[in-house]
Amino acid sequence: LRDPKNNTYAIDQEVRSIIQRIFELRANGLGYTAIAQSLNKDKIPCPGKLKYLRGASTKASFADAIWQKNQLQLLQKNTEQIQPLQGR
Image (cartoon, rainbow, N blue to C red; front, side, top):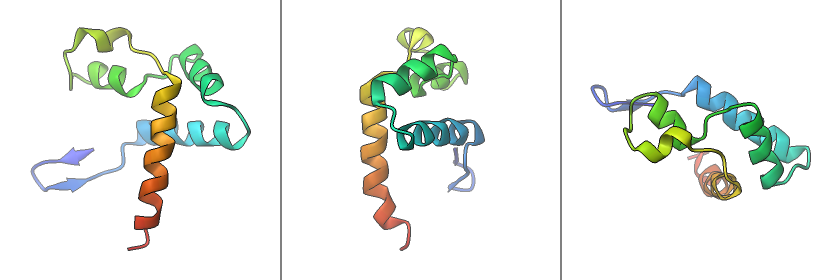
């Protein structure tokens, strides 16, 4: 989460637990479709729905948004690009 007043970032604990779950499921061999189904079954909000629930977006299509495998693929791709930068 970004704090615009101090121009800093803080870890969003709700999102952190979702991301940890995704990577644990992936490490245990589940595919992206199975992970999306698991998250949706457990009513875990996807990024768009979380924005809507928090009032950060009023886009009506986010109200019923669910996890899709392409979101999970993008998450992993972005994480792979960020990891080499973490030691700097």
